[in-house]
Amino acid sequence: MIEIKIPKEITEYKEKFLFGLTVRQCISVAVALGICIPLYIFGKKFLGDDIVSWLVLLIAVPVFGFGFIKYNGMTFERLVAVIFRQKFREPQKRIYVDMPVFYDWRNEIIENEIARQTAVKRRAARLAKSKTANKSLTQENGVTYNTVSLQKRKKEV
Image (cartoon, rainbow, N blue to C red):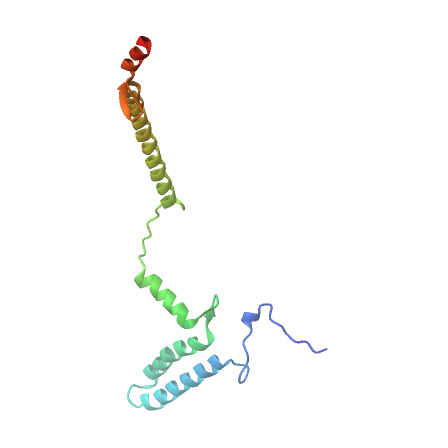
Protein backbone atom coordinates (compact mmCIF):
# COMPACT_ATOMS: atom_id res chain seq x y z
CA MET A 1 0.00 0.00 0.00
CA ILE A 2 1.28 3.49 -0.85
CA GLU A 3 1.18 6.07 1.91
CA ILE A 4 1.68 9.79 1.69
CA LYS A 5 2.87 11.61 4.80
CA ILE A 6 0.88 14.77 5.43
CA PRO A 7 2.23 17.18 8.03
CA LYS A 8 -0.14 17.99 10.87
CA GLU A 9 0.62 21.70 10.62
CA ILE A 10 0.72 23.29 7.19
CA THR A 11 3.43 25.76 8.22
CA GLU A 12 5.82 22.86 8.91
CA TYR A 13 5.75 21.77 5.28
CA LYS A 14 8.96 22.45 3.35
CA GLU A 15 9.18 21.74 -0.35
CA LYS A 16 12.10 19.49 -1.27
CA PHE A 17 14.29 20.89 -4.03
CA LEU A 18 17.25 18.59 -4.69
CA PHE A 19 18.22 15.25 -3.07
CA GLY A 20 15.58 15.75 -0.39
CA LEU A 21 17.01 19.14 0.64
CA THR A 22 15.18 22.44 0.69
CA VAL A 23 16.43 25.43 -1.30
CA ARG A 24 17.88 26.96 1.85
CA GLN A 25 19.80 23.78 2.65
CA CYS A 26 21.10 23.45 -0.94
CA ILE A 27 22.38 27.03 -0.89
CA SER A 28 24.10 26.51 2.46
CA VAL A 29 25.81 23.33 1.24
CA ALA A 30 26.98 25.08 -1.94
CA VAL A 31 28.37 28.05 0.01
CA ALA A 32 30.13 25.78 2.53
CA LEU A 33 31.71 23.71 -0.22
CA GLY A 34 32.62 26.84 -2.18
CA ILE A 35 34.49 28.28 0.82
CA CYS A 36 35.96 25.19 2.47
CA ILE A 37 37.36 23.22 -0.52
CA PRO A 38 39.56 26.05 -1.85
CA LEU A 39 40.55 26.98 1.71
CA TYR A 40 41.74 23.44 2.40
CA ILE A 41 43.53 23.01 -0.95
CA PHE A 42 45.38 26.33 -0.86
CA GLY A 43 45.68 26.70 2.92
CA LYS A 44 47.52 23.49 3.70
CA LYS A 45 50.56 24.78 1.82
CA PHE A 46 50.90 27.68 4.29
CA LEU A 47 49.48 26.47 7.63
CA GLY A 48 49.65 22.67 7.63
CA ASP A 49 46.96 20.00 7.55
CA ASP A 50 45.88 20.14 11.20
CA ILE A 51 45.36 23.89 11.46
CA VAL A 52 43.61 24.15 8.08
CA SER A 53 41.25 21.24 8.90
CA TRP A 54 40.25 22.98 12.17
CA LEU A 55 39.79 26.24 10.29
CA VAL A 56 37.59 24.49 7.70
CA LEU A 57 35.46 23.00 10.50
CA LEU A 58 35.11 26.35 12.27
CA ILE A 59 33.93 27.98 9.03
CA ALA A 60 31.72 25.11 7.80
CA VAL A 61 29.70 24.59 10.99
CA PRO A 62 28.05 28.04 11.07
CA VAL A 63 27.48 27.99 7.30
CA PHE A 64 25.73 24.62 7.58
CA GLY A 65 23.86 25.97 10.60
CA PHE A 66 22.20 28.64 8.44
CA GLY A 67 20.68 25.93 6.27
CA PHE A 68 19.93 23.08 8.65
CA ILE A 69 19.39 24.35 12.20
CA LYS A 70 15.89 25.34 13.22
CA TYR A 71 14.97 25.75 16.90
CA ASN A 72 11.44 26.48 18.16
CA GLY A 73 10.44 27.72 14.72
CA MET A 74 13.39 30.14 14.56
CA THR A 75 16.00 29.97 11.86
CA PHE A 76 19.68 29.90 12.81
CA GLU A 77 20.26 33.63 12.24
CA ARG A 78 17.26 34.57 14.42
CA LEU A 79 18.46 32.17 17.10
CA VAL A 80 21.95 33.73 17.08
CA ALA A 81 20.40 37.22 17.27
CA VAL A 82 18.24 36.23 20.27
CA ILE A 83 21.20 34.64 22.09
CA PHE A 84 23.37 37.69 21.38
CA ARG A 85 20.66 40.07 22.59
CA GLN A 86 20.10 38.09 25.80
CA LYS A 87 23.78 37.78 26.64
CA PHE A 88 25.12 41.21 25.73
CA ARG A 89 22.38 43.79 25.28
CA GLU A 90 19.86 43.00 28.01
CA PRO A 91 20.74 43.21 31.70
CA GLN A 92 21.46 39.90 33.35
CA LYS A 93 20.11 40.88 36.77
CA ARG A 94 16.41 41.47 36.45
CA ILE A 95 14.71 43.40 39.20
CA TYR A 96 11.17 42.34 39.97
CA VAL A 97 8.81 45.26 40.41
CA ASP A 98 5.23 44.44 41.32
CA MET A 99 3.10 46.88 39.35
CA PRO A 100 -0.66 46.30 39.17
CA VAL A 101 -2.00 45.96 35.66
CA PHE A 102 -4.41 48.87 36.00
CA TYR A 103 -2.12 51.05 38.16
CA ASP A 104 -2.38 54.17 35.98
CA TRP A 105 -6.14 53.82 35.60
CA ARG A 106 -6.51 53.38 39.35
CA ASN A 107 -4.54 56.58 40.04
CA GLU A 108 -6.60 58.49 37.47
CA ILE A 109 -9.85 57.27 39.06
CA ILE A 110 -8.60 58.27 42.52
CA GLU A 111 -7.61 61.76 41.29
CA ASN A 112 -11.01 62.20 39.60
CA GLU A 113 -12.81 61.11 42.77
CA ILE A 114 -10.79 63.56 44.89
CA ALA A 115 -11.52 66.37 42.43
CA ARG A 116 -15.23 65.51 42.48
CA GLN A 117 -15.35 65.46 46.28
CA THR A 118 -13.58 68.82 46.60
CA ALA A 119 -15.94 70.32 44.01
CA VAL A 120 -18.94 69.04 45.99
CA LYS A 121 -17.52 70.53 49.22
CA ARG A 122 -16.87 73.89 47.54
CA ARG A 123 -20.37 73.92 46.05
CA ALA A 124 -21.89 73.08 49.45
CA ALA A 125 -19.86 75.84 51.12
CA ARG A 126 -20.94 78.38 48.48
CA LEU A 127 -24.55 77.25 48.82
CA ALA A 128 -24.44 77.52 52.63
CA LYS A 129 -22.87 80.96 52.37
CA SER A 130 -25.50 82.15 49.91
CA LYS A 131 -28.36 80.76 52.07
CA THR A 132 -27.19 82.73 55.10
CA ALA A 133 -26.92 85.84 52.96
CA ASN A 134 -30.39 85.23 51.48
CA LYS A 135 -31.98 84.89 54.90
CA SER A 136 -31.29 88.50 55.73
CA LEU A 137 -31.91 89.92 52.24
CA THR A 138 -35.02 89.53 50.06
CA GLN A 139 -35.57 90.99 46.62
CA GLU A 140 -38.95 92.42 45.55
CA ASN A 141 -39.53 94.21 42.27
CA GLY A 142 -35.79 94.70 41.73
CA VAL A 143 -35.28 96.28 45.19
CA THR A 144 -33.47 94.36 47.94
CA TYR A 145 -34.97 94.59 51.43
CA ASN A 146 -33.90 93.30 54.71
CA THR A 147 -36.16 90.41 55.74
CA VAL A 148 -36.62 91.81 59.22
CA SER A 149 -37.72 95.21 57.93
CA LEU A 150 -40.23 93.53 55.57
CA GLN A 151 -41.80 91.64 58.42
CA LYS A 152 -42.15 94.87 60.43
CA ARG A 153 -43.73 96.58 57.45
CA LYS A 154 -46.27 93.82 56.97
CA LYS A 155 -47.23 94.01 60.63
CA GLU A 156 -47.68 97.77 60.36
CA VAL A 157 -49.92 97.55 57.32
